[in-house]
Length: 507
Image 1 (cartoon, helix red, strand yellow):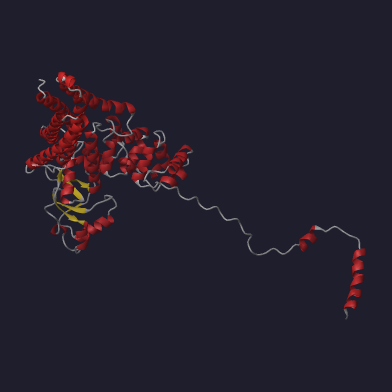
Image 2 (spheres, rainbow, N blue to C red):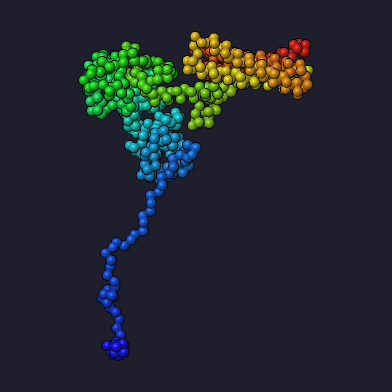
């Protein structure tokens, strides 16, 4: 069939379709005309990615503002789920820093929203004033549950700062078996080993084998969170010695634990000062230290993490004492800080009047040689700085027991020699400066001689005053500063004005 034949055959059909009446399409027709649905699932838009976790700290190591703001918002909105996401996995130290950065009214809300997941060990890392205020704002039931989850040393650390009424009420709600140990620790002096120790430890009889000890440690649930030694005690609980954990693991199971113990173990008494305990850790490179009572009964253990806190606190305490700010913390109120600093400022004012009275003795000399009014403070100020340097070294040496009866004279001679050499060097510098300024070599000689005298006095005072205060039972870090600067001010003014009066014959 040709193409022409095909065209003729199609024409009638087309004409027939054209002449047929038109009708609307029924829904069934539309359905029939619709393409068959694909068996593949309809693609969905991608789910929004989880928001990136907020950075906790910036490049300087400080808490980021974004993280703080997010926590603050979660607390305001009462969003416990979001708060758990933000702070649930924080280390106790990071959590403590965050709590300290929050407003006072936000802190108890954070604890309440976290519920049982709040880590009460973070309270140990807080400033005392913040910790006490937070505990006072919390229900006692919450505090009781939190304290019970802590090691005994941390629990005591928290309870000891509370007033007697709050502490008694909290202790009354703690089960008797746990309360007895806490009360006993709180009865020891504040800065003693008894307060510092934890009463959870592992003690076994010497007849146990190494295998029994290992099995005991594996099967017993109520063990200390951290322990490094096994303590061996006799039937009356007197300490016979200790065995390091690594030694236990290296010894065959059938060996009696009493055969491998260290009988010469260093110990601490419950009433030992905590500074002495810290020195023992440093001197003998200890990681834990058994604490015994007067009858050598084992009553507790001090671990290295507690001593690190002691060293830090004592160093901070000495530094604040040297600055005359006592136990002040940045979280203290304005009124408390003002009152705390006032006394030392008042004492300093009295010593300033004493130095002024020395100047008053030489009014006639100053009237005749006016330059002395400008030069005398230079000598006094230089002596004050030199004395502070020497005093700082002396106070630290006394605190760390670096100075004792065997090397005391050598230490004093060293500091006096240093003071003399510095005095001579600055005498030359000051003398030449005065000569160049006033064109008066005699005045330069007078001021230079006064500089030597005052720096030697600074060396003697910087060493002698802390030693004297230590001898009479005082705290050199607290008291030394005021007296040392008084000595250098008085000697400095007296040396300059006295030498000038004598040299120029003005007496």
